[in-house]
Image (cartoon, rainbow, N blue to C red):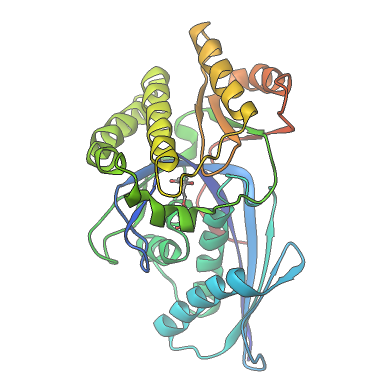
Length: 323
Ligand code: DP6
């Protein structure tokens, strides 16, 4: 008999970034990270374990996938088979509501939704920590898309204790992420490869060493709803990660001219009293974080910057869920 489950998970944006692993295979990170889930930036995934299938299969937005993407999904399914004792192969059908490969971590929502759907279809009722761990092995940032709202991924030292937990609900703070799309093309160097280059930068050591202080400042700023403190620490952390990227061998330079234009504009707007800060992942797009009453203003201003192709808006999102 076949067994099916469908799950939905949100993407997330990190205010303190994950960059570099101590254990690549298990995705044990060198530093902790903090993020906010993004409502309406979703992956919806259906997993069907079926005794009649001869191999695992994957479709992404209706397109059958082979090669690396399928291999990554297969590895996660195999982990679920080992945990559950189930032997059947699975058909995985996944849809995203946002562009892939452009620095909006689609792998986060993808592996969070896959972990929940696959473990449920396999008859496992995993608690949140175990789900977050499982998702982490598929994509590090996916560990943070399992719990709700504002989330911290604790570094941990083993597979057992490296997982994410929520420290504030989505309703805690009316933040919004205005994502300025500079390019929706697939990035040249994905984050998985990028993480392996992090130790080649002489700046990575000091970034990692000072991460616990930034985590503390960031967590406290969120808990106290202190926008100014969050803006300062999140821009610093994003700049530090990009400094590491730019100084690794080979160097990773994700910014486009429009990326830098937005960074300057955001700092100017904040100087003039509009709550806004930027944070950038492994791509040219810029996440401009503001408070919900200022979304229209920020969105309008971003659209006027040459090179901005579109602006997507997301508010804090809930946990990964069975649908
Ligand atoms: C820059 O989680 O995408 O977005 O574990 O190889 O899938 P893998 O990497 P991934 O890395 C995310 C890197 C980042 C920062 C962050 O989200 O913390």
